[in-house]
Image (cartoon, rainbow, N blue to C red; front, side, top):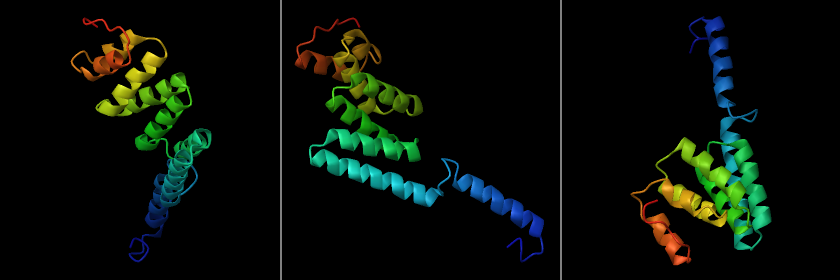
Length: 149
């Protein structure tokens, strides 16, 4: 439109700005990067179905490298890391998720599980004293839980 109006300099500036916004997550254009991230996540899902969690985690990590703001894929990575016996890495991912969106209850509960597996039951239940689900989980797996925590 700007070109048609004879405002060529403004058109070039607008086009350059659009290109910058389109690649703000990296050098791959948004529509292609989004599709690649989703495809990596789908591959990760298939690897989990095939009982190949190491490969699934690799695919989720590839997706996150393209689109770090996709919290659903980061959640899948955290769950896979828990399955692989890597609760510390899972904790890091879950804390990142909750930093971006503190209202994600499922991530908060999974973080409690990660803390439990790391041997820190107090942090597992201390995050939200009103939420009884972490305490219920810990009690279901035989962990002693301080009622005041």
